[in-house]
Image (cartoon, rainbow, N blue to C red; front, side):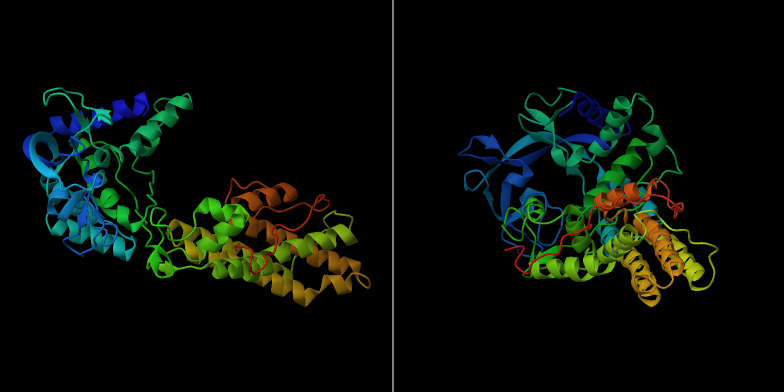
Length: 447
């Protein structure tokens, strides 16, 4: 924990308390008699009262996604020792979510363009009634309270202070950038946009609890969008490192190029529903889609220019007919991809980018510069040069999904990825090409 994060978390606590949204109350907390200590919520496990999942944690059920309190679990037990925990009286600070419910609901009802499951879940969660929640625990770790009135051994609990990390990280960045007030451009500017990319099990913390805290704190911008994904499943079960379901990202990266893995996963992003994925599916998407469409297009054009024109880009000449139409289509496609990304429809955006690539492939197959180059080198050169101009636009469109190979290709083309537009590559530019962007995978590449 940094000093900055501690100070920001304590400031949020103090501001909320001064505004009347934090109060102290005597409550009960589970105590492990064998370990001789109070248990954090997630150290209490039991059966979820809503879905009957037998391994629910005291703060949240991983199966149905509901936020919980330990005392509503059925058959609770200590994760530390397995002992049946005892309830013991203690005093804690509570966040008065009930007092923030009306303002929170009014804000939620102004949201537009949010994913259906995020909006429905959030609205129902608030309409069902928000309960005040304890934000401190009897612990010897965590953010210290800025007051000692509850006595020793109290800390701000992680579920409350973790989301404050968004604000404290922004302030940390501003300090390191040499402009301590730069964070205000994002948090106090109504024209700034903030997107919180989380899994659906984190929806309540980002659409209810964190916005409620921001409303109570005052003067800070609330989330623009919370595009929470559903689950990726393996063999019908939710991917889980702790449960050993599915591979970890590092295990995939030991076998796959980063951009190849990013592509395969982006094509099945669970934006609206849980999505099943298999190793065979990953290999197929990389070989039959990414490489067959985009990778081969780039390599074919670069190789022909290297072989037939010594790596120097031919002149397109005055664009007309099918050549002009192709470039117009690429430019329109780039706009379309940008619009889809702004709406956080990422799967559709990637699909739209790959459709542009498919158009260029079709153009190239019609032009056949590898056949026409001997009889009409000017025509072949024009086809290849137009293809390079198209590839420039597609490189930009794919950069959010394939950042590493896009940067590599941008360097070859001599373009910048800092602007969202197709940048012309000048005739005569030397294209230094070292080989394919991607390596084709064997069927058993993932073992």
